[in-house]
Image 1 (tube, rainbow, N blue to C red):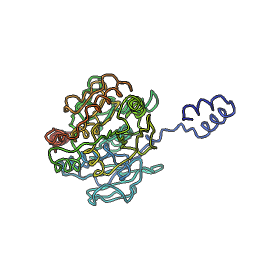
Image 2: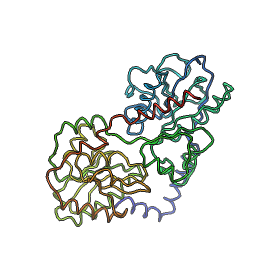
Image 3: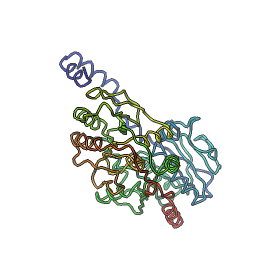
Image 4: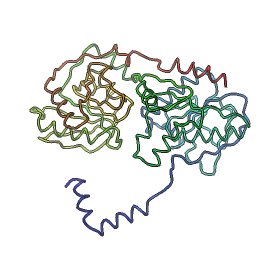
Length: 418
């Protein structure tokens, strides 16, 4: 009996339903932990400007694409301005598996450190304060960090009797879309408002255009094009011109991330496994997040690989013939781009103004966003299987190295004027 049928049976029994609601009521919290206030105090070291990256975590187990991009952007800006730099984590204490270089000194929130490069754990901040300089500039990396920064710069202005500073907002998705219409939807959307001087840096032209089309306005704004992971790039460029393909379907599988439409993909695969004549000859792997293997039809199974090392991921990219990576967002996301340059016929979706067909000929957009359309597209691709594919080493995604150079230079010049 599957999970849906179990729920239907349990709902028929008043006692079970009553116990369920009692348990839910007992554990229900009405707090919003993401926006637990950050209190500040005056710093005695006010001689120089400092940039401050406010980020959920820098621990290896938490650093995926978004945080990694934020850290890279921060390093580019730090190098351009040649100023003091501080990283503040607000969700997780810094552990020994931090991804930061040894240039950064871990300091306590009780210290008013003069170290040029610092990292401060401020996840457990109840009853505590953190020193803020008169010339501190803050950088947001997720909606709740932007929310916290908006409160900080008001306090900073009041503390030093000065005009409120702008803050830099690295916007990597339309984050209200991560939630149903709810408190978090309202809070995340509020960070795009006009109650602060926001300098927006968008991860992709598509995302920038989505905000513009939906009438969000910022005094200064830039966008950068996604670029290839450096390690994957090295592997791609050292793999020759062509690679041998096998009957492998690779899906970007993240069951607990709704915008990656995992259930949609599984339903499409079930329909494909019913109609594909040689379905038993195909291997299907799910990479991204570990989950139980999934039995489809006719003995076909989706095998979960979870989060892989870059070397393992690259080997799978080289061998796979078809890829499926969906993203219910105006952001293009990295997996379909990575799949396509490794010569994979990559199925993805159009969403709002996002259409990746321009990226290269290996990108195949679903004609309709339905599991049936996915299964039909997959069947057509599998029927056209060939054992050799060309690697797209000359694609801009692969070729470009410096996505932030002109942005950080412009930000620097504008910071000199405030």
